[in-house]
Length: 380
Image (cartoon, rainbow, N blue to C red):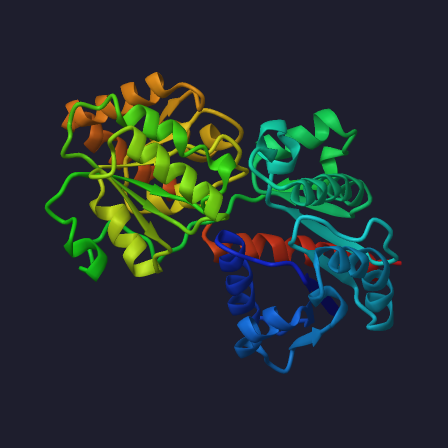
């Protein structure tokens, strides 16, 4: 039997780790043949995982643009899987063909396009693209054989708002990477400058909707002038970088706020282990991999009390209204003023992290769903 995977989207962050771990998992599972339809870029990224039973098929159309990828997925992919005699099509990139002659499993790993305020800061063209993605996600979920959600929050959003049949869906939490742990720091170069300094940490791809401004408003009210704020992540646009830089300057925070840019995994682990706390300001997340990584490192967390953050961290974080700098300031001060509370939440983080699937566990559960669909096809 053949299983196909649509790898024509652009995986990054947690979704990149997901694909990488799927391929590692499948290398040792040759019960079926696996076809990965991919872009040129993704082929270059993942071609080292090729094996006799793992085949990559590069298509030029989906490599051209996001719109071209949409055309490929909706009109060409359904025919392609027929010609390749595929039993089940797995689409981990949020949407799948709305009309398909083949059983399909759709993975939905985002909630942003369903939240109105999420669109803040995106260009007109980007907003149009997000709207299109939203409605293609909905339409293709309604016609999928099975849909996998990363959080109950998003599953219930589809059930309550889009007449989705919840019985044909599963929730598979994802993100626990065994690389991240609370073990002693590997002493990477990035941490040498901050080892003996007190700092809070922000880890995020820096889009405007990530709401970093709220932290700056809170920091100006923190009396501890020695407390640094390290921000790890790449900016989506130069305009957002300039906006945050100006805000930092206007609030006299330039000596306390440090933009680190992108950091590697080793550096990121060291930051998680050595920081006082992680502050997660984004109001719109499905099941945030950053929070899972931080919990795995035993990091005390302050997170926005919205979308799936309470589901992700449960009692392992302090929460705040994402639009209230006063609440955020209060929660930061709680941790700064009570070392026993800080230690308690570090313990809670480690405990909660162990309840979340590793990539291997999530991949095994996903393969079971695919396997069940294949077996259903065999039945007379």
